[in-house]
Image (cartoon, rainbow, N blue to C red; front, side, top):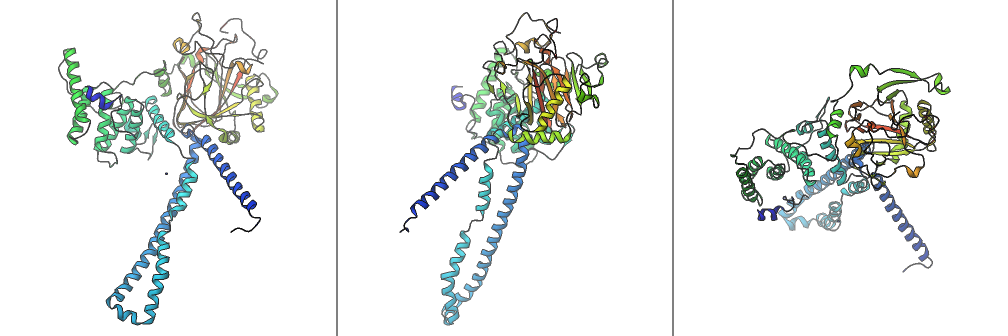
Length: 590
């Protein structure tokens, strides 16, 4: 056992997973040299800036679309290179054929050949001039243009973090929407069948990404799929030994010793000299025997059922309402019923006879009764949406969350998107939209935050969260809501909005700026509501009761985007300035 542990070492049991001068010209030359140095520094700074803005590309579909055109340009550059190589090779072949015929004649009778003065002259010429020209042709490197083009675009390429992030996004979608690895590998998503398939090597790399993160649950699923496709005859670069190597150990980590033994035996049968397999097999067998003796049980062979989604239980994580949240994302567990539906209405809303809405009132639909959530139709036109996206795209940066203990903004795995903040000074359209939102809600935007625009990337999501800042936990609070989720990590949270001086976030106005083919719903796990994105509409709810106390029922989430690109923009209203627009209630929960 100790020998095996020294080999495997801290769960790292596999191989490493892993360029003479005219007077008066000195000052001119010096100025020229300085210009070149400054130009280089400017170029370097530009590269750095570009690299910074391109980081974490996988978190935004919008920025990923630029890579499609980059790849198209590189493909054309590659074709140009191939054509240049073929032209060069054709010229060299022509030379070789001509000289081959010539040397056959000259070598048959060298003296007779050279007796003719023209032949003697042409020999001198060929060796002195033409062979030199041929040497120059052979030394030409048609790849220079392609390499130069690659170097220019490489600064915009995704990095290892992007590849890992995209792989984890697929696993997140797999979990949330209960999709097995085979469905993914064949491009079969709910309602979508495409030619986007995953090869043996793709599945292996997915499994390796999970393994390197000590996520053996997903490592098993993807290594098993890789093995299945390889066994079906699909060609690959990765070997069966490598797949079995990872798979057997990951299965062992999931606590399935009989199956780990069976897989390791397969590995030994293929490669008896494998440096780890023999030792691992003996260790697994001893460990299983010890467990059977302790439990006084007989040996049961490994199940013949293939490993699939549900074979093993997914480990618990930090989110207490994980199951309820993901079920809502799949359209399960919705608490809408006939009684509740009978309390929902649609109406025309003129903002209490607001002059700007009298002639064209807003269409308002109830989405939920308590807490009251409404949807407004035709809030943003297609032209306005495109303008907002145009303004936001150059400013998109990884969306951040406020650390509940430090109050500092930071990125988090549970929020995968990119966002930008737009002010009315950026374009008159923002001022128009701000005024429209104020007219609809009756709340002043003077103390509201800037318009936040967000684009969700691969598997883009925002796990359950509150929009308002929580006060220190009050154990005597008796309001409705998920008490475990309320208490989780928030008992020491500082006032997140204290520096703004505008109070807490009293309400949220969320614009949907795109339709989403699959996934991407806004869900409320506490009371079982799911709101689907519809382009041009907006939803609105209050985060605080009229007393200023937080309504913990409004804990909500943005489900992972399964297929499509999700664009939203939101306006967060704050308490200050709303005193006469939304007066305080008589009780804590008014």
